Image (tube, rainbow, N blue to C red; front, side, top):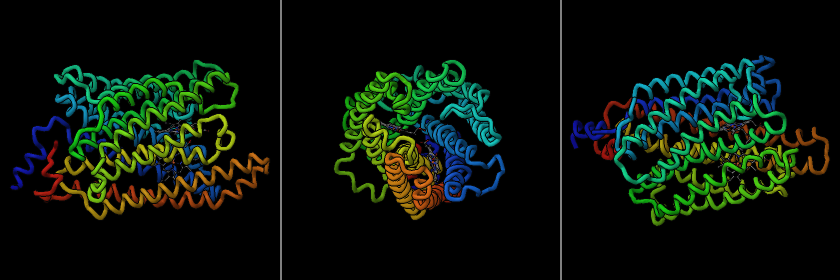
Length: 468
Ligand code: HEM
Ligand code: HEM
């Protein structure tokens, strides 16, 4: 194949805006590394050496923890989700983005907001609502971003001639609507409207809507879009995929109170949360059954296809986290694990294992097609295995630590004894984090090297696949 033909294939008659998608991927990966280096790792080190970094207010535990978690949700995830939306929607609707200028404005505006958020948190300005810690003026300004996204998103569907909505479109639509409504609910009600315990109820609903109606739908949209594309075969069952979607929409909004069991929230509300949490088995297993049936006879592809490996790795973590979730949401199990590192293990397996691995699948699939160059194979292998082994190490470490804490507290031992007992586990968590970080740094290096390579490998699969 000649180079000119190759380049035409890559640029193609593409409907997408490759530079915009690359910019969002680059920003997302930047935030991913920042949230670990400038947040998670420092916070983890302080568990072992509390005086690490001295008394500089900006670098104290209470500020950096929220830099870490807010950047997870709003830096890494929202940026990578926007990249994925800009990649999938034009293909699913077969129309170009209504306003690339607005999308570019949003890119700069949104990322400036996240950077301002980091600065404000480090300066000690925290709204005090779990997962909604940026000060209110940033939360309000961010609504401009959601409006800009909603305009471009719905304009595509309104102008589209496509009669059928593929399941990824359902999930993405719900993301755009729920993310905005949830943002308004979390940003306004707990801090300003609902008093006392009612604010905890709304806060609990907000937390789980954030993971269940924002992160989960977009990650699921990516799985349903990229799995068939990577395998070049249709998804096993369209009906099953819609059953999964509607059960998510029905059960998820009610589960949030499981964050505040045994609190003064009325018991009937806690029972509803327990029941609906358990029903999520059904939601999740329909998705995973569909995924693994689609994979039938193709497991061997995992050996060579690095993007598929990240994606399927993410679904395995999804299976584990969503088997763990409904069980830990039982009132009978809560006294053992609540407030312990078990929950931190669960949240890392959810967002780092499930969400991040699926997103990495998208990045590794799209980047060669956006740049016209193959990713470096050995960097790809190293980054995947470092991240995968590091994650498994971290999750197991935190679950053991959590169970130990639960037993110490359950038997009424002095709290300080549990702190001393946990020291080796916290150190081990930090080391596992270094391993994961190294994996992600290699991903970043791989993306940079690939983007900068001058000579596209003209007959490589990535280039032959072009910008499809
Ligand atoms: C599908 C079934 C799931 C159920 C029933 C479930 C249940 C729970 C429960 C009961 C807690 C609170 C534990 C405690 O504090 O004692 C929790 C925490 C958490 N879950 Fe899940 N989970 C599920 C899936 C997920 C998924 C898919 C994600 C992410 C995409 C996720 C992310 C989180 C996070 C981040 C927390 C910690 C929130 C915080 O307190 O900061 N979970 N989950
Ligand atoms: C790889 C190195 C990382 C390390 C060492 C690390 C460490 C930590 C630490 C120490 C905390 C605070 C725990 C506590 O309050 O007791 C935390 C919270 C959290 N981290 Fe990380 N983290 C890392 C990466 C990540 C990544 C990449 C994600 C997601 C993409 C993530 C998601 C979270 C979440 C969701 C919480 C809040 C947990 C909760 O409130 O239940 N972390 N992390």
